[in-house]
Length: 234
Image 1: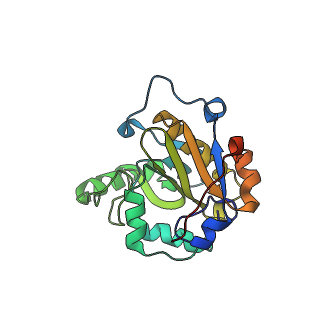
Image 2 (image 1 turned 90 degrees about the vertical axis):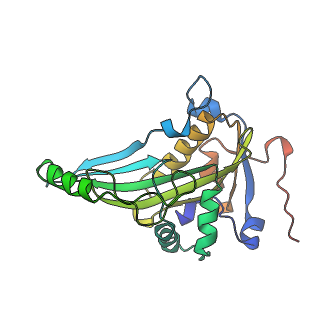
């Protein structure tokens, strides 16, 4: 969402312009699941918006931490919001080395009449597999889930972490066509829930001046307890 995105990594000037924002008490705002961390393979997709079209097809926007992300589709999304191009190989590496990759997908599910036939055709042709790396990162040759006619990436956020105490959110982006519907807020809230469920207690991000109020409305605070972000540019 160009206008309300967390700072993307990769530009010295971008980083200098950012504010370090941290969450010290996110658990109170988002009520994470109790009883320890949740295994990643048990993280379930969350439907954020769902509508039924006149032809019976169902359109929904889904939050997922396990769905494959096509790096080329991601870069098209970044182009759409006006972000500078990055080498695809580095984007792939950044995704694979992230602690969490959360995506928003627009899914068009077929109406009841065509679902059975389409499912049989997909079953006969399902020979493609994930390209490797962490769950949720792949190239474009992954088949759509059974029953899904069309699937389109409309949002993404990722987080890096020490896998124990801290995580930092990067690259929050929502397709311009889908901005203004609360999806950016839902994406960040759901990602915070995911991180808390993975037993991460300190969550930070970097934000442009113009989107600091957006993140404050989600419970983030600037310079908590006087803590300042420090940068080194060798």
